[in-house]
Image (cartoon, rainbow, N blue to C red):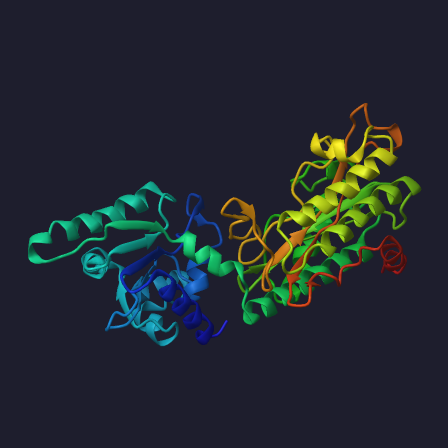
Length: 436
């Protein structure tokens, strides 16, 4: 992302909160994995969205119409000794020169200067209720302002969760964001295709997991958006199966739910395919039912449609299909009303996608499902999970299928960002016949 893109985002936020308000946002902190080892650091999505600043323990302040500058950043100072061990720090100089802060200060000045920034603002926006320590810290600054009321200091009277404004802003992706997400989806889709070429009976699930990360890293996406699911056979009936440590058996399907993260943006793709490269008739029947449900859902992913419409379209197709298979009995309309499909399809058909794999933004507004708008990105991922329940006809037991794509809402309708990964059964079989 360019500096101009980050400035645009901060201007939009400043306008939304108004000149009487102040927004405060902390960066993510490093998290200890065990003893002296940290988890790989990832900046908080909100903080990254507004600044691009990559270091932990920083603080962002947006102060609309402040004459000294609206964008203030507190960060770690340069420290040659620590930098010898951990790598270069940006310091206050880098915050200004490279990330466009109007003013930057070392963290040691945070508690001194923050009350002066809060003074005179009527409303204070920050992530209320996310951490008790954060609430206490912010209220401590506010109390310092209140204590100076006799000198003319004015403390905020209204406190608003920053997410109420910022997450709605993040929901509509800019052209720059869409370009990154398109690349991320392409990288992941090509990696899924590579796994189809690689897969064969006897490989371990872990091999496919490792290959996916390897292929994404080679393409420039070093990190994954979430832990990969590589579920052979009956493991596919476990929605968040992550053990990924069993051999893949001839005659089984394998479900792979995996996506890379590129420049802070997630992709999220699921493909299900036969381990040996050929669907059995029963597997193809279940697979094509899920694929029909996905097509029906994607058709509803258009501007002006409501968020719930793709899900309802998928549920209708799946429920009718379950009746045809003899797994459910009754009228489709009644079965949907009674949610009789839920033992076999227990999740929603999608979620928002962006900097977070389950991205931010409300699904309802004023009690109603929100309308889809150009610039929104969502996943569409129907599935069927037919375990070993005795009510399921024996030929279908142990089959799990999910098909997931990343879909951008456009002015004309939609764009499937992940279309490079085959999902038509004939296309999958053709690709797998040409395995290396």
